[in-house]
Length: 140
Picture (cartoon, rainbow, N blue to C red):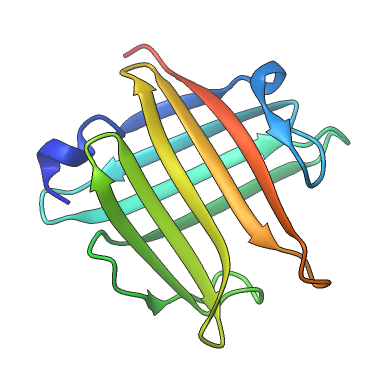
């Protein structure tokens, strides 16, 4: 991914809970999503959200946008993570555990100020789920 292709994703995004559609769990009350991309293609993502139960959560991960799975140790549910630029408006990531895909996310810039993230995964019984989050770009 070039800096040009990542430029549309970079920034701080606010979750629009009323526009979310979750098949697993409930959408958070609120959330922030920060995405940064360095000129060399290194990507950093940090998110924080307030769950429906009032509990605060945080997640952060980074990697190179080259489609290669790299070791990932931030959760016991996955041991590798990759990022791939599909187009200037599509950025995908996949997590693996023991060589099997366990979760993947499709980030889509619907327009310059709207980001939709579709997160898909497998439940322990083999069923799949999709959670859709809609975000609005924070004004600079």
